Amino acid sequence: MKERNSTYDIRKATLGYQEEVERLKVQAMMGWHKEFRNLQWYGLKNGMNVLELGSGPGFVTEQLANNLPDSEITALEIDSSLLDEARNRLHYIPSSRLHFVQESVYDTGLPDNSYDFAVARLLFLHLHNPLKAAQEIYRILKPGGKLVIIDIDDGIFGAIYPDIMLLPSVLRKLADYQASKGGNRYIGRSLPRLLASTGYIDLDIDTVTQHSDLHGVEGFKRQFDITRFKGFYQKGIINIEEFEQLKQASENINDSPEAYAMMNFVMAYGKKPAHWVNQLSIKV
Image (cartoon, rainbow, N blue to C red; front, side, top):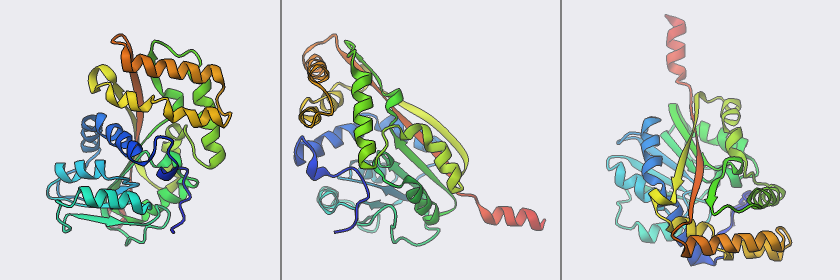
């Protein structure tokens, strides 16, 4: 088995495998139109050679392939079960257009200077060594190639109504727990420095906001499914009062027309320098 060096393992999901796959699907789709709009703004174009890192069950992969019909898409994922899930579902996309690679983001095995555009969605928060991953992506991007990281920062998580008074405490405890495992739920704020330290230029950072009134409540129901938090309560990571407030929030989102929720995702952008342009300028 390939070394993960990541905090995410679908086989340990408290929802169970199939329910977790469904949660990932809803999570990927609820904000896709905004995310794709921003990806295009950052330079993603039809016909590019595109790499998706941490592609999971392939829901974003499918959208990339369908929205970029003249592009070749490479989906890189270390988990064989998730790759099989994606292969089975996306069998209708020709292999000439869609390639699956089972490798680590730290050591992709892909050739230097190969991709025009790379997307890493909700991957970096799980990584033990995000710098090594950013360096590997830099290596395989073409000169002038672009990377967009879509991720979270629990410091700007969002909001829920009715309020959960203990939500900041819960988020801090979950972030501390993930940090103890090697991840970082505050990764969003550090992405510009991470990209700069790797050599990316023309950096930018933005947020994409999802709101249940605009994007539908189903994704938020799954995000606040109380089953996801039972394990944290049972392990003593959150206390009974925090668990009960989360349970009430879950019930509100499921049953109350007055309830709503909002979540923020960070999008960080960097470009690999086009060295040949710089060299030409020097000669001139």
